[in-house]
Length: 177
Image (tube, rainbow, N blue to C red; front, side, top):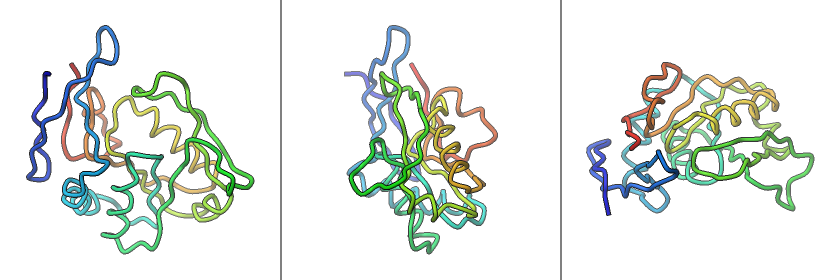
């Protein structure tokens, strides 16, 4: 199996290269379960953020990073946009998203309690990897629907052309193959 050697926050990871389509392969970066990479990257990202009131992420891979950045910034909570409506979610708001790593279009949802937490707040959107930016755009639309103001968009890695974007904060570039 081909791999890509990633160096970030003083750590090294061997990432398997996964074929997504005929002409696109990516280095698969998964932070779920990797407490060391989350613990080391969160403070670096937190230092690069402007002053915010709340961290918002999409389910699921951004959750540990959002938690750790919230902890570093002394925020008492963070919000997770869900990929499906759960029984506890009343009066949810939704947006549609097409991501590079999912085959079909998906939706992101916020319940009314989370939407109230976001309203009038300064928000940082956080994810593990920013690639095409479609997930981030959907998350931004969701936050705006809830009445929040997105001040920053951050990730550990910027994949492919995302490395050239000036509107995101990231620690390392990740090539596509």
